Structures are given as C-alpha cells and as structure tokens.
Image (cartoon, rainbow, N blue to C red; front, side, top):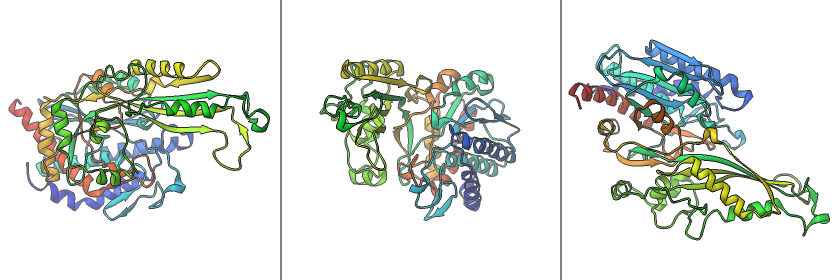
Length: 464
C-alpha cells in the first residue's frame, strides 16, 4: 500500500470536519413527526456525498419508518464484496442540558467536534467515506480494490423496526461476502481494540395500576394500593445480593466466558479510576465473580431507563397516583434468545406482583435484537488487525460492545459474517448531552479503512 494515506487525510482534515459539521445540522431524529423532514434531508445529503465520491449506484429507500441510503461500487471482479452497515438517525436531545454547543450546531474544541451524531454514528460513516477517498488517492485506482455496498439506515436508534422487511425486499442487492458493522466503540485512543461481540437487546415497559384516577392521599392513604410503591418494590428485587438478575432460569443459556476471552479482555489497559472518569459514572456495581469488562461485554444486564409516577415536577398534589411506569432495557449475552428471556420476564413479573395489583407489561418484539459474536477464525479479523496497526500506529486488542444492534439479523438473513469496526470512545457521550467525537479518531479510522480495503483485496488475490 502506498504510504501517503496519512498525508492525504491530514491535508483533508478540515474537509472532513466541515462535512460532518454540515451533516450534524440536520436533526435526523427518528420517530418524531417534527423531525421527519430532516431525516429525509439527512438521507439525501449522504446520497449526494456518495455520488460525489464516485459511487455509480446510489438510492434513497423510502422504507416505512425512516429513509435508508443504499449505494454500491462493484467494479473489482474476483475481489470480495463487502456490505458496510451503519445509520444516519440520531437520538433526541434535551437542548437545555447541552453546555458545549447547541446539539445541531457542531463546534470544534480541543480536538473534538461536539454535536448530536458526531460519534453515533454520522462520524463513523464519514470515517468510511474518507477512508475510501484515501484508498483511491493512495492507490491511484478509479474504483475500490474490493466491491463495496453501503446500507445506512434511518431508524437504528428506535430499534431498526423495519430493517428486517427492507433486507427481505432487497436481499439480492445486499448479497455480500462480509458485513462491516460500524456502530460500535473502540477501547481507548492510545489503545484501540477490535470489537468481536455485541450483546442483544430487549425493550420492555411495565405499567402498574393503582386507583382508577389520582386520589387525594388524605382520603385513601393506608388502604389504597400505591402503584409507585409496588413498582419500586418490584424494581428493587431485580437483582439478588450478588448482583445477579432474578428472572427464573435467566442464566441457563448464558455461555460461560472462555479462558482465551478472559485473557483478551485482561490484556486491555484498565483501572477503576480511568473507567469511572471516562464513563462519567460514580461507582462500580454488577454481577459478582466477573471483572468490569467481563460484566460489560460478556454477561447480561438489565437497566431501568425510565420511571414515572405521581408528580415528578412542579407542585405536589398530595395524591396517590393512578399508575406507575418503568421502562426496562435488557442486554442479553451470547447463548440467550430474546423469545426465551421475554417469557422469563413475564413469569417474573407475574410471580412478584400479587393478585391485588393490576399491571400491563409490553415487550416490543419487533425491535428485539439477538447477541452476535464474530467467528474467531474469520480471516478478515487478522486483516483488520493489521490495518488498525497501520492506521492507529498501535497493535489493537480485542473487546466487546455493551449495546445492541442488528448484527445477528444481518448475518442471519444475508448469510455473511459480521466484522465490527468503530471509532467511537466510551467518553464520547453517546445518547447524552454534549456528544462529541475525537477528530484524531476519525482520521485514524479512515486510515485504517484505506489499508483494510487494500489488504482485503491482496488476501483475495493470494487465495487466503
């Protein structure tokens, strides 16, 4: 591979930042009618940029839910075909909580670009685009050395509810030998790591009913069933005294961590102090008997991501609330299946809320996601590791991803293995206020991808 990839990217650093700044201006929040036009504009922005790079085929799919962008550049006979997956939708914002900049007015400061979508995942998509530009410039080619297809969807943040139907409809177009999934983190700027596993995700909402309406506590306090108390007691019993989730049979299907995987995670530079600072958390909890990184990437978890009852803001009315609601996010581990865990959750709720209490448990089966692990013997893993060493100047470690995503869905429907590559960092504040991305990480990621396409083509030519 010619050695001018870093020079090319350094020369075009400001172009990358300006492109990302412009894309961030589009508030492409899925699931909100008022931001629907920006979702369409975001898809069209990306489509236009892909055409400008040279992709001969670019389409905006107006699928139900949100538009997706599909592109292909397949002019390398005999070379592998790679499908790149990511998304252009972003999470909603609480504008008043942002301090570095307004969410959709990107600002560069101290080597970071702040703005919604800067890291998750518009920045990751642009790292791909600049990696391709660098690849073409460095090799002097008119087309990529491998056959590339892109699928950048528009409702990942709301669970990819319509992705399965879109893949079914366009399965022939999406046919590939390898899927590169770019919606993940790496470990540290000075110690990159290849993500090789992704946890699954199940979203649930539990509503506990009390009085038929909010009732003055002075009239009914004592005999009335308070749904907030019932829900709080239930949430308090989610874990036992060793941090294990108390659903019946929950751990029966969880695969134990292999010694090789333990060694991979133990090799990453880690300290509690560093983790607490970068994750912006105040303490460490979780399942006993496992390290923090094992709990984070290899073991299941359940989180309460929302609770509502009574009068959370404003003046209190001194009333027993009619309902109390909790939203749960369950992260499943390798070996578990969403359908089984959903049954376990229903059994658990039914057993712990007695007959005096009415409730409604809603589980969104349409957006449940299964865990996925990249095959350890996948040749492209070694190719990516070599490319990352070139791009970052550091030999990468191995890690997992604590969140979910449609990796298992893609590999199941398309029959190709998934390779993860991301340039986000745990301190990038995904889904949070003042989201940001390291510009250096975007450039090093682009350099990695420029080397990866070259290496993948060489491997194919060598028959490896």
